Image 1 (cartoon, rainbow, N blue to C red):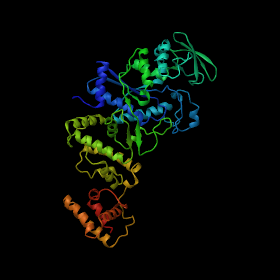
Image 2: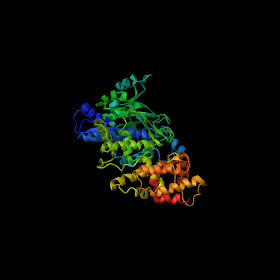
Image 3: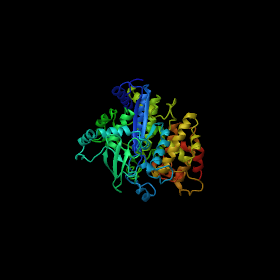
Image 4: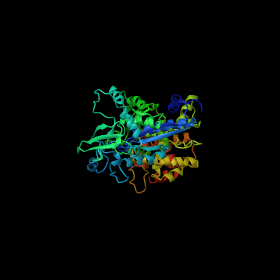
Length: 521
């Protein structure tokens, strides 16, 4: 493979350079499933996936781990969850202890996890999932917790470097979920220097001594948990968002802290936020105002969804659009595909860049032929002409190969979803039927429609220039302004004053169907 300038390849090279030759590289990502996992969270997942692909394509053995931080505290009830009052009674407990009030899964956390695990294969992603509640509750991290207790003062000094107010002597590098109430409202009272930790439940006043080797109630706080797991799993690469990568943020503290646990910090980068256009609402798991990967896949095919991320540097903010920009995004992807297959000229540098983006955008193997080159706008028009009947619409594309039709079918489902749910009202249309009221016209207007009908009768035998000239002549010869004539034709065809470019629109409708409508006049 020639030297690629794609950011995923650059980071793959950096990992090999900084971590040295290894039998196995570990790339990590993860999140707390505290609410619906949104498309902003997906940016981290796919950033890792793209780097993992780049490493594998260099012949490296890679482990892609995805941590569900489901032993975290349930802090806030998202607005989009049913049974709000019931959920409030579980605040301060681990999110795996919270019931799934949607009734679809074993518990609250698992419901959100399953939503993601079901959908990631659709975009070609197959991470190895690690469930942190299971790991903590089985005492897998007992050694890590003891190491934190043994190095309490060093850890406190690291944390204090990044705090305005220093931690006092009552602070301990461990959290306890009370065995009496299930909540984290506890105070650590002491440690015996080995495995036994004593705590008090602050709500009931009860005290208990637990053994770190057998308890299912202890865990490390986030700023210790993250570096402990870097060391435990031997993580070589893990990106993080702006909040974690900000100065003094959890990445800064974890980079120093990981040495306490006998590890070293992974290669990383900061990824930026994603905004949403054409749907409204700020992305926020806790508020419930979210756009998930499933929402995006309603409008964008898996390949175009991957393209959105593969074609954008991670530290660049960008918008996922549901408005008319959808047309441009599909056109950008199609341009990338045409350049990859040599169907559109590009200099060597651009061809290499677009080809690499195209390869990384594919869910499975890179196709051996380009997709059927129909614009998204034209496809939308074709679907509307056939009232959403995808098979009937695609049957008009007689020169499409079976492979192209398969991809077009997936794109058509997205196109129809977009038309019916998100497209502007004036983008939508349907052909007029016999049962629809006719437009009231007479005189010159009626004569112009009759002239147009004669053009349509011959449209399949006319060359493009003659066909276009004859269209304009239908107006001119009857003393009509071209703009007024076009408005009239659209009213006759689709009951609206404007529509797609008329010459090609009539061709898309087809001679027989166009004549059927025009013959009403």
